Amino acid sequence: MKDMNRRSALALGLAATAATPLLISAGPAVAKTKEYGKTDGKELAPGVRLVELGTFKSDIPAYKSINMVDIVFQPGAVAAPSMMDNDMLCYITAGEFTIKKPDREFKIKEGEMYACAKGTTDGATNTSNAVGIHTIGILIPA
Figure 1: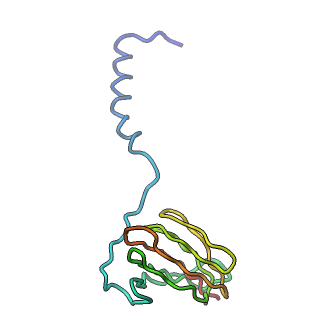
Figure 2: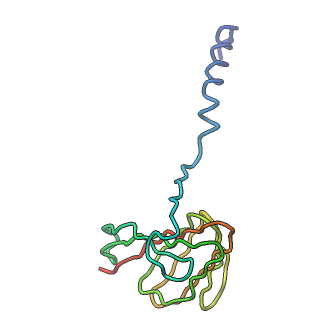
Figure 3: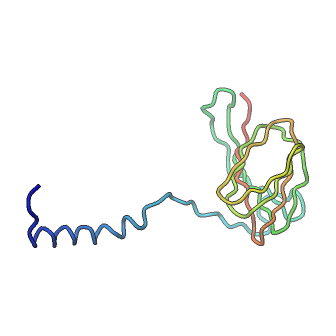
């Protein structure tokens, strides 16, 4: 290894200092949660609304498309257990929930996900003091 002189050390120090803000801000990208008004979408239950996001083609052979929706829960709002017509992937984009399935009950919070199987019943309660949002991919069979 070559000896480092004062000029090389200064250049290296300046380069490291310039890169520091880039390294500090590096991390996983986080999508900003959309804010909904109390009347956006269709009411499913008191304080629970469905907002359609769109339908997209699926590359999964068993499913022809994926219907994306946001289910928006006001604080304390409850979606009573109901039968799932399709397989679904549920991602919590805001809030914290208690999920009730026939065989268990669990808590889930922002950034976590769970699955719902066709023919099963699921219910959800927003247990946070803020608006909670389930972003759901409904898998439409081929």
